[in-house]
Length: 417
Image (cartoon, rainbow, N blue to C red; front, side, top):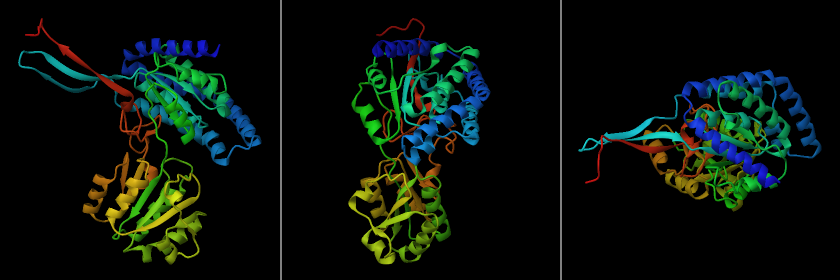
């Protein structure tokens, strides 16, 4: 029965997590190195199996965005390996003394970082999540249960088996990394019931998947529903820099969660900026949809509706709005944004600080592309996702974010008076 299969996996992960919690940083880093070596040894098999799954996906009319996320080529494979190696170079996230003191009676009290325990990762397409998630979890001393989409089942299974072999060769328990090997929704449904064994779930995929996971379990969920990201071009913005940042934020990779979806242009610079922006976006085959004020300056673009301000396109479409000052921009972002990544282009430190303090988002970018909000550019190496929650973590979820803490008190026969 599926229930028994999934329950056994969850129990094995719980047992493995106890062993992982006491594994040294050196052993965990060795495991990451061995995992990368083991993956390298199956590279040609991975590329072959992945190519077969891509062909099947196209035959079943999966979207091109989905196919792109599914694809592993030589460059992507090397990138996956590099992320594992970078995670190994990070400082140990465990056993850090977060705070401490000795009280008046000589009792030594401190708070130290510890693993969360067992992490369940449920995701669509993206085989790179398989390696990223395993790497982050091993670095942070957590056991991981992987459940990728059926469209990449063979690729994900091959990647996982290679990493298991590497981790075991380094001395970690066999069940530190596991994958659910059966397609279909039944296994996911059973996984959501395993609150006795799984400490946290991290869903990676579309809004529908994340909602189903969050609403269908008692296990805490680290999630983000949308990446409705904004860039505000202030009145004093350098035009050349503003155009470059807007284009990179939107066009560098349109199908990802930190791609720009709404561009806000200050009223004082709109006459100068909008024609420049329009030309640049046309050159990058991006459709613009504008507010009524924007359409007066760019009459050939489509009108933006109320729905557009709420939309994460993940496509070459961009909403544009003229705003009357920074406060109007901030109010628009806090109303329509998803709390993911929002940025400002300005030469004023005062405006930058106002934007930073008042925009309620996980990442705030000052004169930088929204595409830079993530684990790699933040120095985290691999991440298991980006959280728009405020509890337990916010923003990119790397090794430090997959830890909790415990209080420890050292006494010498101390009694409560």
